[in-house]
Image 1 (cartoon, rainbow, N blue to C red):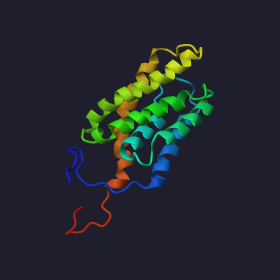
Image 2: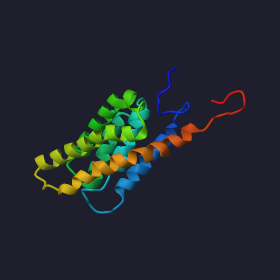
Image 3: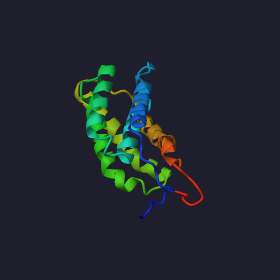
Image 4: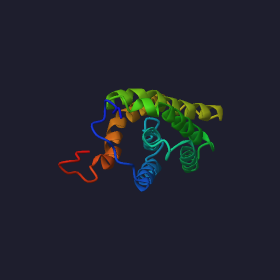
Amino acid sequence: MIMPRGSDQLLLPANPLFIALTLLIALGFNLLPLGRQPSMPDLLAVTLAFWAVHQPRRVGIGLSFTFGLMMDVHQGALLGQHALAYTLLAFFSLALSRRLTWFTLAQQALQVLPLFAATHAVSLLVRLAAGDLFPGWGLIVAPLIEAALWPLVTLLLLAPQLRAPDPDQNRPL
């Protein structure tokens, strides 16, 4: 099997409970009452994009839609605003999933930056179409922070899969 350039070893299968826990923790961070600030990064979007890239059979469009509806209800936003944005994010993350893992983490961050920018743009367009006011130019900062968080999220969420299940001298993998 040809290994991607960025990976040094084979990964263990991701535990579905770990995937669910990380998504719930990211949802919890988004639910913190920090006030509405346009420059606030969306950690749930970063986590959904990560799992859609690395575990496309477990996390996909349906789960993204469900989490989007939860965010819509929590924020009192137009029902479907986040659901549409997260669904499009998951769709394009799934489209990039085979190609993205061949890049280094810094290159991956540059590859997912347009996805995060498009997610915020779709959410903004839905809000503006519903008659909401423009939140300000601080909205441009959020996708940049999310792309900067991508390498850290990748290292944290892949860490449980990097350990060797039964290492010894004859089987280094």
